[in-house]
Image 1: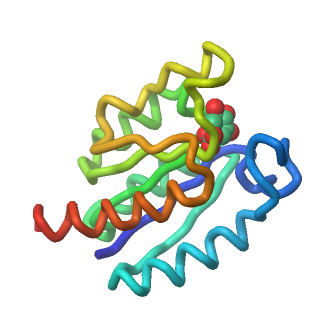
Image 2 (image 1 turned 180 degrees about the vertical axis):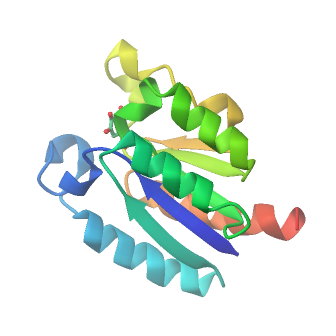
Length: 146
Ligand code: DQA
């Protein structure tokens, strides 16, 4: 299973950024662990983080025919980006939306997502573990929908 992991704006600041909300682990540490985990699941993980909406959209477009599943933490673009939604619809690659924090326990503006209804599933509030669950779910989704 070829999985693309996308992380949106400010997730490059993990470890430094609001550690009480997002934890102390850096993005590099997280990606290294997920990479190792993906290998145990016979999945091949590629990763891309950007603070730029257009760069995330370009990467989604480039995934057409190259990637079986997308796991995306869109950061604040979750709550703002019709363009990211349209990019995922354009390529029609199944995806899971992940958030480290429980967005439903935070400010009201974080409770709406432009992606949730087009995602196969949404995981939030479980910290880095959420990405692991998403990898497991992606692998079993592709196994039953080849
Ligand atoms: C986030 C939640 C978003 O509301 C926020 O803008 C982020 C991170 C999370 O992982 O909890 O940047 O996606």
